Amino acid sequence: MSKKEEMENKQAEADYIEDTGAITLDENDGNHKIELITIIGEVEGHENLSGSSKTTKYEHLLPKLAQLEDASDVDGVLVLLNTMGGDVEAGLAIAEMIASLSKPTVSLVLGGSHSIGVPIAVSADYSFIVKSAAMVIHPVRMNGMVIGTPATFEYFKSIQDRITGFVTDHADISRETFEKLMMETKVLTKDVGSVLDGKKAVEYGIINEVGGLHEAMSHLHKMIDEKC
Image (cartoon, rainbow, N blue to C red):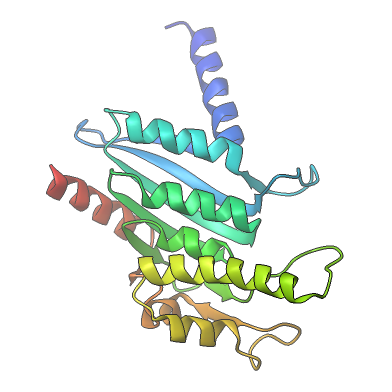
């Protein structure tokens, strides 16, 4: 390969990472091939956010996850999260896709995984969080004008039930405890909800274990070996 071709390949890989937030990690011995997926900034929904916003676009991730499920040369998936949350429908779609993968999956929360980032974090087969990270749990919010009718209340409740149901189905926390954290009034000064650091997220059973990249990668390789 010429130097020019090598530079073009590196640029293409850089562009791919920027567009999709994904990259393939190869073990030196060639035993395991792991796909890295990142959930960063705000999870973008049906409307484009401003160009200055860090976003995760679900229209990029959903086809990528489908491709991974069908890829015979990919052994496992590592999901890195540092997100403020975002669009509920898009976030739940991503979470459902990750949860439905047949390949071993591990998530790692770095910085934060707030709001709709919570279902995405627990959607993997096993989850890690660093001690300094945080998770914010709060009720569903909606931007713009909201018509105050019983139908609107029921709509909000149905969305909240979907989120709560997903989290409690994929984590070791009861519905009652999760809803209590969600409706806490003494933690956030201008809102309702709870902020959990890494240790607390594990104690409540939302995340499986406190750990960093080494622990997450090691556990994923172990899961792949056990599956084989």
